[in-house]
Image (cartoon, rainbow, N blue to C red):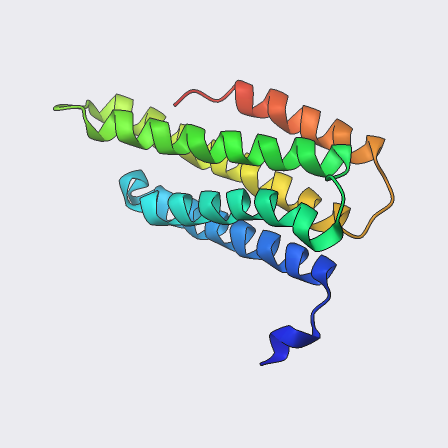
Length: 148
């Protein structure tokens, strides 16, 4: 029962590590078959939504701007992956070229998520604000260039 020894900040950070690990697993599996990552995407989104709900309970205050901005971007990207997977799975026929584009888009979006989650892990214990806002904005712009 070692979880009793973690501070609330450590629990938040650990939750982000779990989501990053799910993104890394999904990216690895998407190299073979992007349709097989639905479980990781759903689980990571659920953990992110839960963090949004528990943050104020843990700390008794709203999320700092950079934390809130990054978490909301993360949830948008997870939902975008969900929607892309649903849309592609409904297709009756997909060409090899379209499949390769979709696979590359999924992997690119997951790489953006991995980078965002690395920053989220750091920001839990950092006093920097603008630095992480800039990272989130850069990653948001990067994700906008990805086609699913």
